[in-house]
Image (cartoon, rainbow, N blue to C red; front, side, top):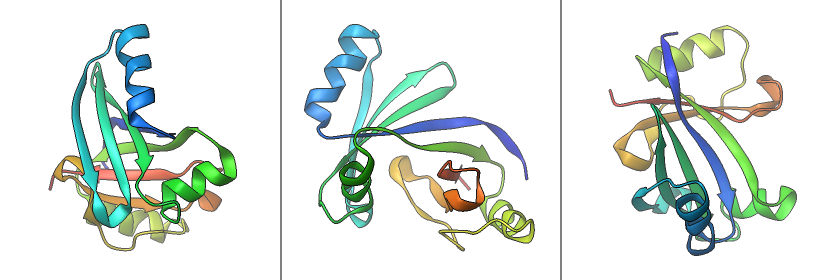
Length: 134
């Protein structure tokens, strides 16, 4: 499958404006990018911690995936993303291994990455994302 590292940890928040100061002032991290991903109805903010990123996710629509997540579960960890060598092969291999896919083909995500999600009912309750720059 070619997993190289944890690409990022996605954290659902009510407001980037309220959440960013915690990561910057309390944890001493620097927000290096804020971006809207319109088709996912989300605005993101990124922080780097070593080779891993923290991705804060604010819903731009209560009916979007993050809006629904926060309504149901509240703020908190939303997903775990792994960097993979080849996202198409990784999604295909996961499906062949019996994993239910949310995305059978990759789509564009934040930072221009190609992404694909695995369903948490097949991944021990953890929404899992594959990311690749290829």
